[in-house]
Amino acid sequence: MPLIEPGRKAPAFKLADQNNEIFELGDHEDHAVVLFFYPKDCTSGCTREAQDFSSMRSKFRTAGAEVIGVSILDAKSKAKFVKQADLKLRMLADEHTNADGKPDPKIAQKYGVWVEKSMYGRKYMGLQRTTYLIGPGRKVIQRWDKVKVPNHAEDVLGSVKDLGLAPLA
Image (tube, rainbow, N blue to C red):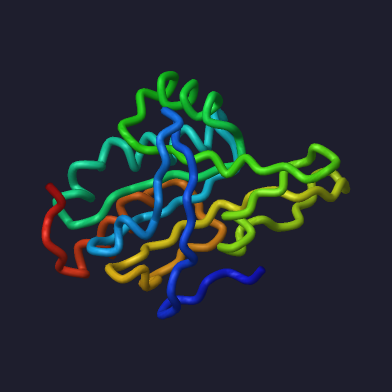
């Protein structure tokens, strides 16, 4: 599926987090959600990105947004990642697999971030690092494609502040 364009409604979903608690996007329609998709738990770039968002969590909440991470590994992997990287975020597990036992993430596909990649001539499916800023009413406000980690969280926070939303409790 294609990426969700700004101005469109973000697809609804339910996923388990690192504590096997269900996060449902529809429960957060009264405020903004920063949804960042990252390739893999416990890798250097993904750890840095998650730590950057985590360290700024209170600033995002003051600006009216909750920050949520999503990747394809299971809740157990998410729990390890959260502990290892000392994250203060909900990290969601889009852990569906196909009949062959290969990853078949439903939410990543809905958001257009499950793409064909290539490394050393080998083609494979993987998660493309992408961030969505979803405003009240599940409207996509902004999307960052093929994210480069340095300064990304700060850029996203600036866009959230520009919305002028009420702080989260």
